[in-house]
Length: 191
Image (cartoon, rainbow, N blue to C red):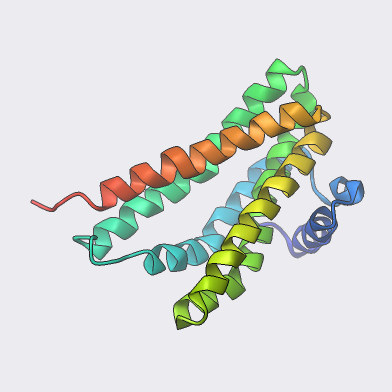
């Protein structure tokens, strides 16, 4: 886990990022070591992911344990795949030096989404206002797209259209490949 100082600074950076303040970058360790340390956030954020996975279990799931395991593998892939895309994009745009910092901010942004997702998870768990929960989920999705595009532009120093392509790739990888495959694997009949 990152140190308390790094955590506190990153939270300040995430706050500025949520406000679309370009000064957010100075709060993150943009080095290769900072990028590697940011992957450690996957562990403390994992229980929130498990909570979300648990809420998605329904009668079509033959085994909750297998489903949770398959989705957990998908969670791990979610942390691994897009940073490789960032590295590839940095190479294509000749922004090698900016790639580690972009990966660090990308990983730290998972903390922002987890914190913002908590009220939605509580509403969903309690079964309160399902329509409001769906609307809040949609608002979170739109906000995540806007904020991700903003920080990709700032971190990699790329044009809006290039950042938009990267955001689309991230959404397709996550929502169109990783989660559906892990769901399908988790719903395979046993035996």
